[in-house]
Length: 357
Image (cartoon, rainbow, N blue to C red):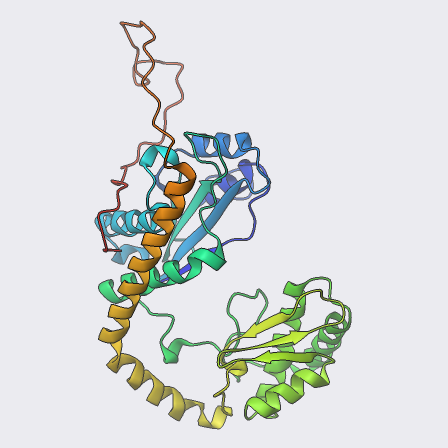
């Protein structure tokens, strides 16, 4: 399982809801199922949010087939993820919509959409900020994967040669080179992007494709050759850590951070990759227990910090008293012919009961 938060979040509520539930032509999306929440309510809350960032959306993505999961397992994952994000908050202080997708080769995806507003006060709610929350969320991911025995993206055998979160980035197999007739065309396009990038996103993707090409042709054999290749593209090396390389581009106001095995300090040529990966995989498996303890400690510490943060912002906001409208005969939605029914979905118990992600 991986946890991914999407960058979008500034449009109307119809955007994320339609993406999750509606296919082209207005038909229901195949393989989409609401697991928890009310799509209409979530859409209305997003539209009513006065802040620039109106919603936060993302996905818990699995390599395993959706049929391998029980309903109880899905509920457990959703509950514990909510606990990780909203520790210190009560269920009526936030809204979340969960939608299952299984249309990508049958793989399970648990998609979520969260309006960025605390519901009691109307104050801004920030469900996820990488600088403060990424370490805690990663610890949650590691614990869940280890507990259930699901695919661990951190395993050396599964590690990708370049950042997997850049669209159009090539997959990590050196033998899937494009036809030579297209290589020159792609190289020209990438060089134009690198010379005059329109965005950091486009620049990263172009750099990765060029580095991938050099790797496939055998001109990269270690960290020194990687640095040389980057400098030959007109980039300035600003920082090289054990796990990444940061470069500067004249057109960019900020440094560009490149991640993936190619950019790591211990990167070796492809001829040595199989032997090295096998050794690293063995070391990784042997340290499973110690990593589990470390992840739990990291998660627990992060939960305490996030809980204090939420209590500082919203701790003095009390739940409103129920309104006494003086109505004796209340007609339920089921009894009303004109009422629009809410999505009938099971509600997980949203409560944090200590150090158990």
